[in-house]
Amino acid sequence: NFFDWDSIADMIDVHDLGELISGDLVRSRKDYQEVRGNHKSRERNGFNRLVNKYIQDESLRGDVVSSYVRYTDLDQNDQDALFTHLLDKIQAIRFGLVNVYNDRILPFDISEKQALMSMGLIFEFAGPLIQIAKGDVKRELLALTQVEIGRYRRSGFTLLAEEARARLFKRES
Image (cartoon, rainbow, N blue to C red; front, side, top):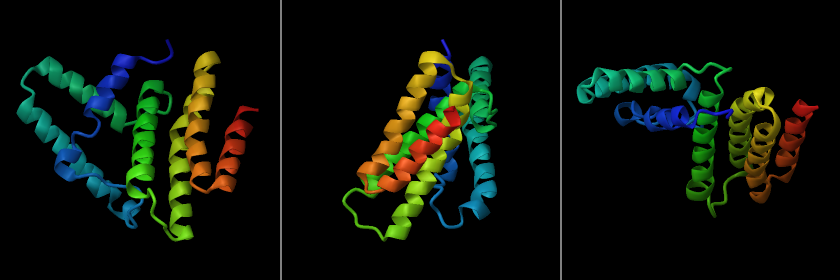
C-alpha cells in the first residue's frame, strides 16, 4: 500500500482546473521560463474563482482545494503527488508522440530537444519516487520508466534512450 489511490484520483481530477481559465502552458514553448510564473499565478487564480463560484459545500471545497494545493505545491517526499505528476507528464508525452509528432519529419535538433525535455520530465518525478520506493513498487516504477524511455528508442533516439536507461540504473546501484 505504497500509494493512496483515492488521493491520486482526487489530484488527477482537480490539478488542471485552473487551466480552464488560463489555458495550458506547454514546456516546449520557447519563452516557457519567462511566462511560467505569471501563467501559474493566473492558473491558480482561475482555480480559486471556479471553486468559489461552483462548489458551495464547504467540506467538498476544502477537499478540492487541499488536493489542488498538494499537487501544485509539490513536496518531494509526497509519493502520491509525485506519482500524479509522473502520470500527468507521461500522458502529455504520449499524447505528443502520437498526436503532435506522429509521422511528421521534424528537424533533428527540434526532435532531439523534445526527446531530452520529455525524458528529463520523466526523471524529474520518477527519480524521487524510485528512491523512496521499496520492493515490488520500486520494480514496477523502474519498469514503467523503462517503457516510457523505450518509446524514444522506437522514435529513432536509440542512443538517448540507452543513455537514459543507463542513468536510471546507475541511480539504483
